[in-house]
Length: 319
Image 1: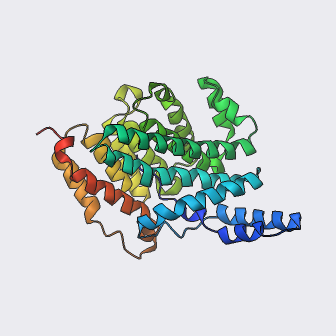
Image 2 (image 1 turned 45 degrees about the vertical axis):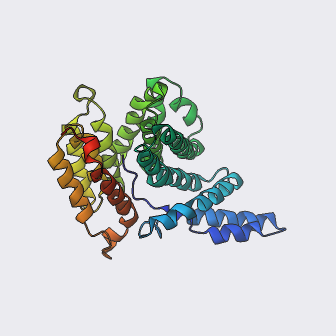
Image 3 (image 1 turned 30 degrees about the vertical axis):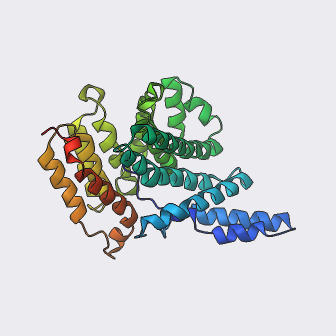
């Protein structure tokens, strides 16, 4: 499953203000104002890193931004936006770097890969929990209802949220689903799979076109892992892929990789698999056209995964 292209930029906007606020030796109200101003900046839309063309730069700088944001969240326990930035940040960082590294490491040592998958899982769940915390601030008791273990009680919690809560639902569901995907040795986590579907169904109901098709991108992976009698299957995944591509203007490559892995690989359609991934690799992701530019970082991650997959065809397909 591919993470959305919503950027790591929120992790960094206003960090100077945060550090400045921490330097005040007196004047708690001034410091509090500066901290809140920083939090508001971090919560605003806009991006600097979604157009980043050097993923390694993000790899080494993102942890500082995340830890700084966590300090900010501790100082502002009622600020939802900071928790949304942390939710998206931890999920994206884990997917783009920790999870990818673990998958590649498995080619050499499954045991070592398990260590990295566990780390990825913990980061995904940290992101999930920040999304829950953001919803808990607006809807006290949300966490208890959602995690009650009762399907109807969880549905009650989800019915409380509104359209402007969709970003929280998205990162909650995406983080949780990705955590489950790394838990092949933990059957207990798979019991949460239907609840993840409920969360994303609610998000889809509230804002079907959120983030230019991001929820449909999610369902490309989700439905490819479900059977037809569960409401999923190849046809359902393809339907969501087509909608995602239309809503995203064909500029999001991650969904194509998800479809190749989730459907074409499972069906052992090698020629179509190769053709689709070569399409991803041949796409010019460096275009300065605004729509493409804002997807650059996510598309580079999709291209890197495509390159890796094409390099191990003999492992993925029976000759």
